[in-house]
Image (cartoon, rainbow, N blue to C red; front, top):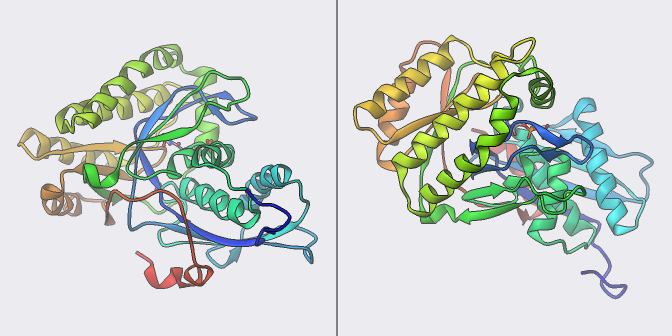
Length: 345
Ligand code: 2P0
């Protein structure tokens, strides 16, 4: 906590990594506070990152937001709204310069909004000397983008739906550290096009029109319990079964919305079949996929090379990005933010 003898530094930098949901978040119980209709469980990645520097500056009349070296008008509105929450908390009215770099393509289905808002909140918290707990950072990151609540933490993470109308209990918490059950993640990139229907719109359309919406809400507790138990017991087969179920169920809901949401292309489906064939042959791997066409394969590290080779060979797979499990959001030196380009994957 800052005191008058300990002024806020006004400037700080942070790094956060994307996460991939194994038990999916899809739908909101409160759009304004961005509260989820269901809890979710994810893994935070290593290697892929967002690095963000935030400088509050009395000279600035408006917030200035740069993403990957370009002024980002679309994303800036959400960034400013998130900064407003932090300013309100700090009781200040200074505008900020935000410089953010990703070492992976934005909008490629790798959840850049998750790592982006987790890094933003972590850096702004330090810059303003707020001294927020990780749970408080998670609640604020959630209001920027739901999945960002999970990227505050590393390894296996659960984001709670919460019951309170103000969302104070809708925060993420770590379930198991990355080092306690190392897994490998292979992301098969099947398209570089920006997705046609964003997650927020897709969720809202699904809740409003999918006939399976109520069934989705009712079954989530059981899926979360199975995944929690599988993670606690390092039971790969059990986790594989419930994660594929949660993924296909989310897409079944979305497919049945009006008009239906089809996030897959042909290569997504071919890659999905290739992963299933590997597992049927005894390889410890399962698939998941989000609101876009990239197929993510999760496997034990011993199988990573074989899975990567198999995905590479699927027609329509453009590239395979490999990662392991990584840490939560943390502060870094401001000099590391500019170094982002050198580390591009
Ligand atoms: C997830 N997704 O659990 C789900 C599965 C996509 C599919 O969270 O509206 O960018 O900003 O809260 O977090 C992507 O949605 O949505 C997402 P908002 P977000 O990872």
